[in-house]
Amino acid sequence: MPRAWVDEVREGLKGVALAPEKSHRVGRRQVALVTRYRYGVESKKLQTKDLIATGIFTAIYFVTMAVCGQLGALIPILQVLGPLYIPIICGIPFILFLTRVRVFGQIAIMGIVTGLLLILTGQHWAGLVLAVVLAPLGDWIAARGGYKSWWGIVAGYAVFSELLIGMVVPLFFTRQTVLERIGTRHDQAWVQQVADLTPPWMFLVMILMIVVGSAIGAYVGRVLLKKHFERAGIA
Image (cartoon, rainbow, N blue to C red; front, side, top):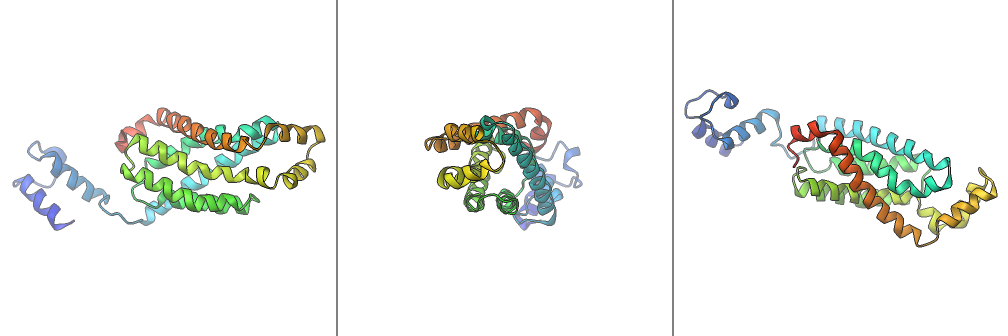
């Protein structure tokens, strides 16, 4: 425990045993310092437990994203709407993860690992490039509010989620190749419907859809995980 903390706690305790939650004579500042010391949250470095939690939630997030992404194989319109509904559904595990985030780097790791998994599952390399850039940026935004500011969390999640646009980059920038590949799995009517639903300007609309979906997903996550938010002290 830092020397400055020890001195302040000693002054606040005034002879009371080190059990702040049981003493009305200890000020809030002293209670906070001792609590931080007991639970180890004064450390700003990634610890093993942080990496374990990040790994678990990364797996949950990626599986959720992958399952949602498969809905696009049902009908073309779902493929186009993926940038909207995927961050909504993925918002639940992501927001739950944020109640466990203590230090900078956890969100960045989740994003970069997700980008690597996208590559391993056959997605375009743009997803990894975006993840390397946007995940740390989203982490930084959320960290500005100490991972406790609601608006910081929403903004951070929206930026983080933009890595999803990497999955549709080929459809707009290597269009003919993608449509030909789709044609090997579906009939020409399906291919034409996908082409009709994705004019060039739709790429920008999808970027906006991710922002909207992220905001909705964050709110849904907050409603469903209200007790976790209260316990984490997120306002």
